[in-house]
Every structure is written in C-alpha cells, then in structure tokens.
Image (cartoon, rainbow, N blue to C red):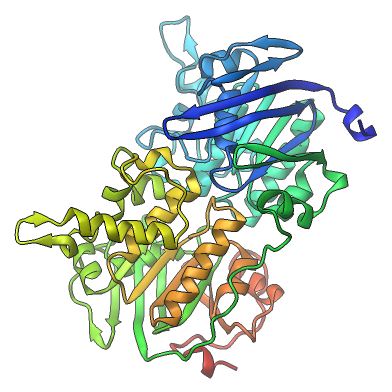
Length: 526
C-alpha cells in the first residue's frame, strides 16, 4: 500500500461483485474501494459497467453475487432510501428532475420541510435551497421552474439535491458533461470543500485531463472487469487510455482529405426573441458547404442550441432566411425540414432523442419509416437490415435489436440517436453536443463516421463545449456569445486562446481582434 493510500481510510468497498442481465454480464468479479476525504475516480468505456457498479452502491440495483461493505460491515442496499441512511448520495448522468416544479421543490422532493408535519414550509425550503445555490454559485432563484433552465443549470440543481441530503459518500456520474468551463471550476471548488469535510467523492467522467486534475485515486473498468487501480499520482493519461481500451492512442478521427462541394446551407439574419427582451439568437448568418464540418463553439447561454432549434423549425417566432441546396425553405415544420434534408441530433438524448420504452430498431427507424413502407405494409426485413448496418457502422454494443433502448449505456444510446438521424438520408446534419457522455473509444468511432460522411458530401454543423474537440474536428470554427457570432476562423488559422477570447465577448473579457463574419467558406478566410 502506498503512503497516499494510507492517508485516506476506506469507507465503502464492493467485493467480488457480479451483475447478470438477460443476454449480458455487466460486472465480472469487481472489487472497488471508496476512500474518505478523496476523489475516487471510476473510468471506462461506455458499456464497461461503470453505471451498473454505481447503481449497486446507490441501492438502485442489487448484485447477482458479491457484497457491499460500509464502514467495515456488510450491508444490503435494497433501495436509494437504504443507501441514503448510510450517507450515500448519487447524481445520475441522466437528469431526474420534474420540469413543472421549481428548483426548491426538486431539491427537497420526497423530503419536504414541513410545519409540524401539517403543510410544506415553502419559505424554509426556499431559504435552504438559496444557501445551496449560493454555494454552487448558481444565479437562478429557488422558485424558478426547472423547465426554464438549460441542461447545465439543471445539472447544478441535481448536485444541490444530493448535497442537501448531507451525503458522506457522493457519487457524481458525468457531472461536467453539460457544464460550461466556468461552472466546471465552481464544481471543482465545491468538491475541494467537500473533501476537506471528509466526504468521499466517487467521480465518473470521460474527460481524462479533468480526471487527472481532480482525482486522488483511479479505478479502470473494461468489459465488466477491473483493469487498473492506482493512486492518481502514479498514473498519467496514456496509462488510463491503455487500461481503458488496451492501447495508448486517444487521437480524434484523422482528417479525410476531400474537396468541398457547393454551398448546401445558408442561414441569413436568423433572429429569435428572448422572453423578457433581447435576442436568444441575434441576427446570425452562416454558411455550410457540402462535405464541410463546421464547429460552433461558445459558453453556455451563447445561443448555439437555440440557433439549431431555429434551423430545424422548432421555434415558430424565429425570423430569417434559410436556403438549402440552392432553394429557400418556406416550410417551417420540423417534419417538412427533415424531408427536405435537414436533421438534428439534440443535446438531451433522453428527453428529445429517444423513446426509452421502445426497442433499438423502433427508435432508429422512427424518422425514416417511409423508406421501409410498401403500400400499407412495413418491410420488416429491410428495416432490420438497415438498422443492423448502422449498428455495425457506429459500433453500438447491443445484444439484440429488440432490446429496449433504455437497456443501453448512455454512450450507446447517443449512437442510436446519431443512427436515427443518418437513416433519414440528410444533406445537412446538425449535431448538438454529439459527444456528451461518450467515452474516448466511442468518440473516435463517431468522429470517424462524421469524417467519412463529410467525404461523401454531407454537410455537418455541430455544437460543442469541448475546445479540443472543436479544434481537432472542425474544418471551420464559428464562435458565438450572447446570441451573436463573435468570430469565424479556418481550422489552420485558429488558436485556442483566440477561440476562448472570442467566446468570452460580452462576458467581461475583451475578445481577440476579429473581422466581421460573413458566409465565406473556409478556403476564403485569412
């Protein structure tokens, strides 16, 4: 045992845990230790068994064999209430909030503060919620409906809900996947404070540099087995990658050199009013050529998602001109724009991209059923063949196409959403945070597919909060801030400091000098 390990006592252990589901074994004899006052990192590719292990610790699932030990005593965790009694709290990767309720109501759902047990003390809940939100530097009022919050803001509410239970063991499953850089720093500050108070943090993320920075101990899962467990001081990123995927490569998809075609999409003067005044999308113009990948980078609230909603037809109040493949779009319905050749991969796959109770096949062909329909009959054989081919291309880990999509890991669900979009045969693919919650191997596969599709003439416009991702994958980069385009750069002409400065325009920082943005393709930028 290293000196570092002796500094933090073990407060929870999982010993020889297996978990068998119909058709698959998610965990295969796993041993896992959680240490007090430390960040215990758990990492692995999608489908490696991370979420299953966390569900066992949180009482959501019970192991097929093996045991959970808390403070030296074997325990049976038959539900989240049991886990809470042992001081275990969890923030799931998929948000579990009630959109029609306020922030304060969500934080105390099921544990409402009452006056003598008669009625809910909303004032006390609001006061306690305000203190938690201040601790997380969250600016929204406790009485704000969760439906009005962005995904990243909802993530902060989930963390506040866990902290309100005074958890001594706090599991954070992909906590920064939807957070801006500023919100990540706030979260890291909270984690440092909790560590000082003796709280044990279990931290799951696919952002390896982030793990090296925040972690004290690391455990790596691959295909349901532990492939490495070390103090973080003894490892580096290549070691983590080797333990995860068996090699030291974590390269993004390499560029497939090809010539761009003509302009496939032109957006001119797109505007979307914001509730309360101002613009969520403020007179944005951009262009996209066939075979080009254009990345849109910006902080949360920059208007990137809202711009995509305008383009796909989700915002009836949007104004502006959209030209697709040389013809102006007048049909403002989502269905009409999908038929014309625009498709969207949404930011929130759970709420907007999938129907959890339906099968993999039913989800993937939901937007393209007409292609498999003959007269009044569905050609099931052709449908399943097409789905099988996309599952192969995207390397989706699934034992049966008839399994409900909810049985897949988060990353594999994201691949299903991407496959569903590609099956419509689009000319323009809009991708909103396509790699959110996806591991290194899955990212490489998806980015490789994106490059191959671009080489075949598909125009791809994608939004990302990952600076490395936008720099590596984009042929051209557009930066947004406060609803406006603040800069546009070719891949060869962009630098990370400049892109960050442009994204901070209007946030109290001075952006780097930039020319006015036009609809010029990448080859004409200087």
